[in-house]
Image (cartoon, rainbow, N blue to C red; front, side, top):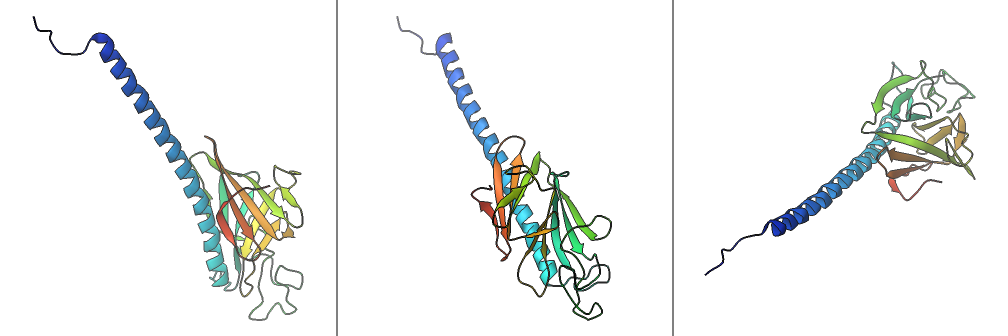
Length: 211
């Protein structure tokens, strides 16, 4: 008598269990990859927004009939899911502004204090990061690091401004001048990316860490 070929119930259950495990691993890996990719893309988008501000500022794009204002990006501790691209048109040019001038009426006199002032500076665009991603911390360096949450947790705002003809980047935290800044971009589902900005104009969206 010849035995019929085929699977027993136990063999079939084992095969299905193996397929289930493989599918679970594949789907979990795909989900992790997607989350990492979204986080990385958001970090690059923030860096690109900083570059756009640089292009506007060094190109003297007109804002509210003012042709030589600087442009910057504002980060606030109270709005971690948003960032604001702005034209730095307030206050009017003066000897004590971010761009000091003894003649406020001169053609090259520049307004602004390199700090975003709600209701006074021109808000170009406010970006919502979305996907559960936030700028969970920002830090500024001037011999020592100060941060919104890490370190001493003393900062409440960070502004990064570009203005011609100065090739340097103006970095202000709570109105004070700094040499460098670092942003921590985080996902609620885990993972962090770091963006480093220096006063020399360097913008790195793949920094290894923030303090």
